[in-house]
Length: 347
Image 1 (cartoon, rainbow, N blue to C red):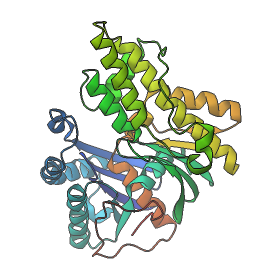
Image 2: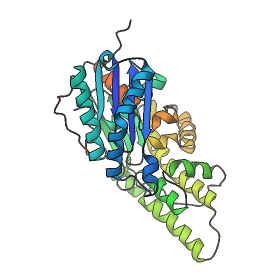
Image 3: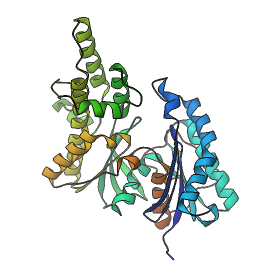
Image 4: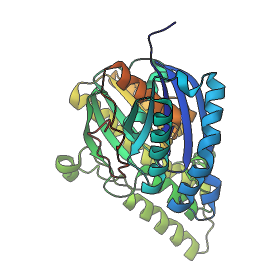
């Protein structure tokens, strides 16, 4: 027997239907149904398509998770669900499902923040999170730096993207280079056979940006610079060195992300850097973060790639943390909030 809470988590913020089950910080099940193939022909996620896919996948994904964990819904202590941020229609499917399951099984429900869940999932891999810590979250919709003093009580946003998020830039540059959606994995693969010899810009790193945007990110200018470089080669009738472009673009993104993350750790006297979100699966980001952090005496914690992308395990992990910390459950009329602020870990 154990006193650790058994928590089920539901994730539907974008194009992944995830159901995870954890006991304390031990992962018991992580069932996933992805609709990414349905969006590939559009070159990006279509909200209505995502919402319908969540509706179709919810019940079978739930059953797979319960079977994998060897438990029933009656066994769980609480149900956690992503309440935001994310696509409004997609969030509604998950929140409505969580409410239904909670009422049927007479379990408390926790509406949690998607971004905070990306931080919490690291506890399933590396154990309790040292506090304070700095979290770098990088995905298709978010590029954020957070100061985590007390994950159950809230996080302090230090900086965020002011235009294109890192993952969004990967998708757009991949499309420009004739690669499939999502763009992160194919660019990472191509970059391994290329050289980062093209001097693409590093947004918001100039001295003039330090006061107002020290920990903010901007990748729109980088994306435009890549497009103009490729167009210039094509106009001149010269071949485009796709692998070199991929390597140079990826290096520019990872250079900015890791430099600002390490700077944030130094500024706040923090010795632990947690990296999460889909882009955290990028091999160059992981390697450069380890290299720079080691020089600064900072420990880097990055979950395995499967836990970096959206999944139910991360929601269950945060829910488990909240239950253990004695945080009150959400009301059954909890909303789905597509613009849920980072300062709210749960609603």
